[in-house]
Length: 98
Length: 375
Image (cartoon, rainbow over the protein chains, first blue to last red):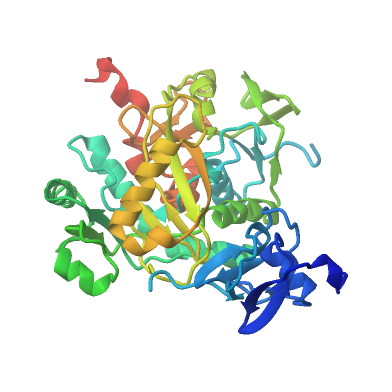
């Protein structure tokens, strides 16, 4: 899908997606990092279970939701990557409470 | 207009007008609903979606008792009403009538609630059933309560529904039965012409022999044109809605409910703010805080939208129904319980309008009660 020159990364930020390490450029949003790593869908919708990924990339569409460090329903396009961040797919609706 | 004059014209494309229009269409009338358009205040697009019996009509007057019975009647009619509408339109309404809860966060609230419920059940002709549950009894049915919850009133007659799907379905029902919904038809003048009514609107004029004014806050200006009085005023309510979550609340409460799609609504504020529909941080904070005190796990659930909308409120909070004293065939209705009362509006009220006269509870809920001469 998307491809960027290796030189554009500089010193990489290392985070994980679904347990696999991903290398991102400093300042990337999670959405950019995942798309650049070839992730084609980020979540399953709560109603139909359809696979979805980023669409607007500017915080409006809520289609890029992921679990970030165990917090559900985060907008991947609005959060900057950080070393050690654990990102996972948002699978349907999250539970309320622990 | 194609095909001549409609059998009935309903002014107001909200839930009240659309439910009445659907009821008339079911009874074989060719109905046209005139809707102002999206400049209207649209209480039907901002409400919470409770089908709610408990507490409605608590009070000493005969009008209160009539409203309580009318509400109970609608609650009893709702499942058949929903089934007919779903069958006709194919729109699932997400109706659930497994009971409802009003949470009390202080001992004083609990005592006051118990008195109110007891008064309601003791009214003349009441079919209201309820239970006051203390914290321990409640916690067995409803997990996750906050430490501030002291108990609740519970009624098996309560429920909830998706109010937007309901509005869409009654309007689809009208068109499926040969009627029409016409937006951009704000009514400016009503004149009697022989045995019929001529309505002048921004979308053109039309005539009908049977007329129902159900224009919400617009009825204040429209009702005098058929010699009725509908002294309604706006009361603002604000609502918060969260992201979709797994089901955690199967039973609706008066200020927190989880929809069939998984979002959680928090609401039930009441403000006198004129025609201002904006949402305000102070009120939203109060709503969110009560939700968090009721169910602490909500504190980490994200809110995705908030809005304000205007209830159509009458001087005593009860609906007003009227038939014109001078123009047979012309009626007016105003209420803030358009969801709960939808089954009664599409049922017995529509039947009364077909027969040309109000009866029973709606006849007991006229505006005459506000006139000092009547006392």
